[in-house]
View (spheres, rainbow, N blue to C red):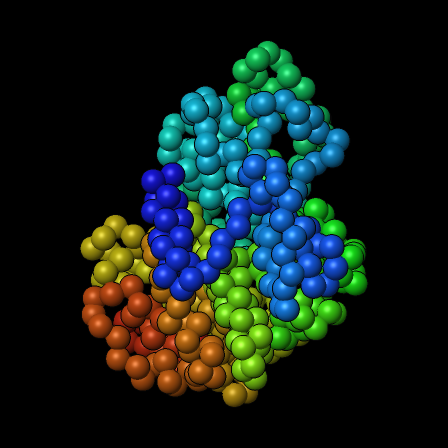
Length: 388
């Protein structure tokens, strides 16, 4: 909360410095040129505008058939404001948020169980990266159930919830808190957006073009309300594009990739096309994987449980995707993003001198494996050919 307060105050100061008028209240549209705002004093303000950028974000998705009125059944926003640490915590959902909060509350001392409906944890990531995370993560948790549905949550007492699980069998267990993390949905339901002429898609998202412009030319939308991926760095970038378009600049939102980071320990990060996606699209690729057990910095800092993986086009050697699992993967992925945006080939990354000893060396090492120039590992020609 202290960190959030500092950041919020910093944004307020930046807004004041730029003479930005900030109105706190609940806004909805009267038309494509006017907002109706109910402020904190319950006064109604009518605000006319020439251009508008909608950036109302998202909220946790609920499970309709589960009792969401019980104070012990919570969502991710509530999870940041616990008054006490639950002895036993059930997390429904094994995606980004579920795993990150499982890490947090496990560290606080909670016995954490994760129930995921899909067959694998973090199904959006390549499972070879997830496997390394789970090799240490599993020991921190009480249980991880995959291919499992939570069908019922019933109060046992003021401080306990009985959960019913269904996979190849039906069983029950009790928890002090249940945290539901099954995704997020756009905050478009209170905007009266139909009064502008904009139509939402069937998931409640606002359709936009590459300039972040909606169907109504003077109204733009950015961030979570425009669809996945729901990431803050994507929203910020889109905000700059929308503002520049309004200012008359000829710009579009057309990134090669948007990096993804899962802030567990170890972290998982990736950008570009995943190995799963390449296989689904029947794209031929070459893969280079460098294990951190062969990296001096990782060994000296006891963070050798990781790897760096590069995927490149088999014919052109252009980099298609990079995945990293390990300490500070979220920092390392930014060099990978620059490589993708610059259209870098494997040779470019191989021939870039990296400081030693650093974790970033693993990127050039993985490129060297594909290029056949690796010296930090011995890979026989037969094994290298099979990898290709």
